[in-house]
Every structure is written in C-alpha cells, then in structure tokens.
Length: 120
Length: 107
Image (cartoon, rainbow over all chains, first blue to last red; front, side, top):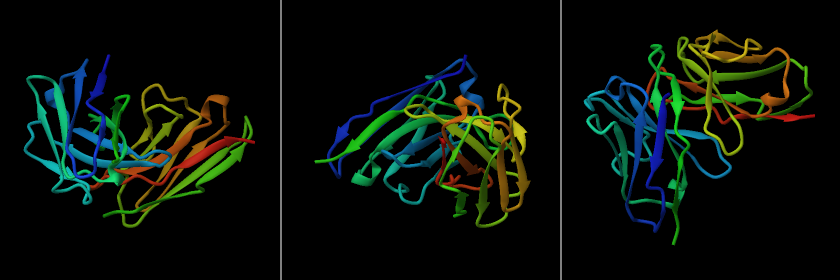
C-alpha cells in the first residue's frame, strides 16, 4: 500500500525557516517524481514544487523560488521542503504527493498533509 | 504560467442530478488535464487523468472530456458521497496550476 507521511509542520515567525519531510513507503520511491502542493486555510490547491527521480530536474512556483528548496534522499525514501524567509501567505497545509506513472504527470497519491503556520 | 479557470465556483444539486463542471486553460494544454475530488479535512483524490481517462477504482458515473483549452467533468447521477470540491489541474508545464475549485453542495 502506498503511503506518504508528512511531518515537521509548526508555528514559525515571519522571516523564519522550517523544513518539512515526507516519508514514502509501499512503492519504489526512486522511480517517481515527487511534488509538494499546499492549501491555505479555506482556499484552493496550489502546486509548489516537484523533483525528478534522481533530483536532476526541479521546478518551483514563482512565488517560492529562491526561498524554498525541494530535495530528496532515495536511500531514505524521503522528500523534503526547506522553507526560508517565510511569509504569512505561506501559511497552509502542505501535502506531499507522488507524480503518477501513467505518463500524464498526474498526482496519483497524496499524504495527509502537515500544517505550517507563519505568524508572530 | 498557464491559468486555469473553473466554472461554476459552486453549485447546488440533488441526488440523482447530472452535474457538469467546466475548466478552461489560458493556452492549449493538449490532454494534460486532471480532475481531483476533495472532501473536507481530507487530501484530494485523483478522479480523471489525461482529460478523459478514469483513474483506477473511480466509479463510472464520473467522466471527463475535452482537449486543447476547454474541458468538462461530468457526474452522470450525483450520489451522496459526491458532495465535495472538485479541482482541475493542468500537467502540461510547470508550474502545474490548479483551477480555483468547484464546490458541489446538497440542494
């Protein structure tokens, strides 16, 4: 069974940093692109970043580029999101997600999410 | 960036109704269009990928159509468990933008 379990969400002050993690199991992690998607309270879904199987290709949402860094450790079946210079508008539930194998870049599995709150 | 516009933003319908949600892309995305269902407090679930392909385990009352810039999600006979928010997403290019969502509520 595919499982994605996020951790590390917390309350952080504006301008602060936080790293959230996602532990994957139930599939060959090193064979899949992985993504982060966020959802601000009461709002819609917003794609944040993704990373290729070996980490050689990475894409970011414009508003987080230069502040957020996605990375992965295939030996630990984990993907990470390092978030620096956090802003109030970064407050959201952050979902770890697997890009599917069907060839259409769909997201076929999601974690349960971890809440990041940026507030003083 | 490709903008995705869904309509309507919300709708009220009864069990058994046929429901249609539309999604328009700001430029051609071929068939790189996915639909997700999200229930309150839960992560989204994939319903449709490649504009019209039903994801494994999704009931056949859900269907998708379209290509290029205009797409449709149809629920042929709305069931109680279908009351949720639905999102389209383009996966043609990064950033892989979502529509703003359509909330389907009980009439």
